Image (cartoon, rainbow, N blue to C red; front, side):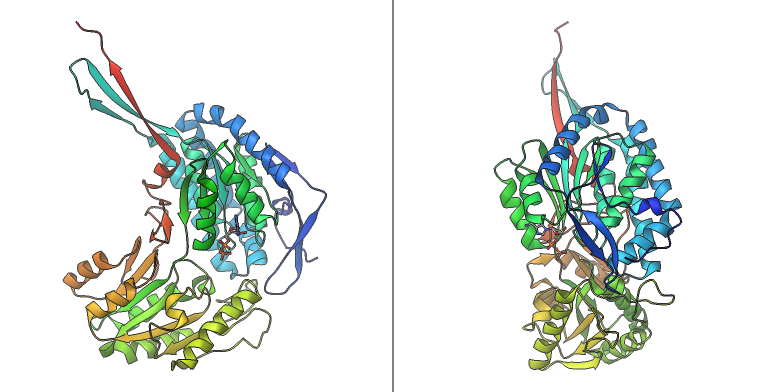
Length: 487
Ligand code: ADP
């Protein structure tokens, strides 16, 4: 077992948070560092009875939590934000150790997650209803916004801190309570948030976090339990669809952030240097393991060679290694299956005529490290164009006309993020409107911020996280029609 050099070792919690108590279990499982294979912790493996207890606790706690004023809930969330920021170095260390991304990126994620908590702490006070003029002389109509109730949250491993923060912040701000199930691979970041939530004064039962390796059983329970009103999930489209089916019988509400297959278009009127810098960010953040990562680069013929040369130059500066090491920009992939997926995409593309510019093999460091890879001559029929690689492979497809590029960009069942570089104003409007996605980056490779709505169209999901729209996912609208006495 490796010991992490934390300033506050109590943040490395390995038990479940249920009804304000830290609860252990008979069975445990190992969480290890994907860069080194070293064991970081033995984590409690909670079972279904624990989950049922957590749902009961969340259900019992919800009315009192909702009865607090927005300002009272805001004060608690604000304290949670401040604690996340104050402990950002430790939270980042835990995150890098369990997930692999470089320490600086992990700290960025922690501050990004904290920013959602701050944002929704502020929004807790602004859950406005409406007064509608009556439909008859002696009536008035009020619209109340009320919390949906208990929320089941299922989060993935690629942003172990921020994906939970992005869900618990609006849920708690709205007056909902939560039962969260973090990815079995990365439960420690979620549990550390739980430690800080308790310190911030989140009441017992309001936030419950259960590590376990029983993904499908927990999902089934959360989706079918009558006391759970809503499911918020970030993960694959495949699992999102399973959850919707399981929630159908009890008419669960859903917020789903699912898979992407982001196109990144570079037009002849773009600046190739700026486009390559944006491409590097959009492709290689988190080593390609984000659902908004660029997956397909469509580059117009006139700028193709300049863009490819600039991107190759930027990529050659990436430093692959253990994320806890100074200067490393690119960590390992999460597991062997992830490496195999990149290998499959590379070999499929090569077999169908694509060419390697750089990379194309496992990294000499071994383990789950893979070389940053750039391919040209990619076409729509290759696997990389159809399916999210979720790894460090930049695949370049050449095009001639704007129409052709948009048709190829939209030729997918996914619709999360899309990016393009162009300078002509009319083109900027045309392409931004034409891309079938929920998030567009124009002349930028970074689109995630708590102040803007994050979410997808088509099979990339439903609902939005962040911005003033984000709280709507956790609120019901109640129509109150008032009859007035005749005068
Ligand atoms: P990813 O490719 O990001 O791992 P998944 O959709 O497989 O995407 O996983 C996202 C989260 O959903 C993880 O916490 C995982 O453990 C969980 N999960 C996987 N399968 C199921 C399932 N059948 N029901 C509920 N949760 C699941």
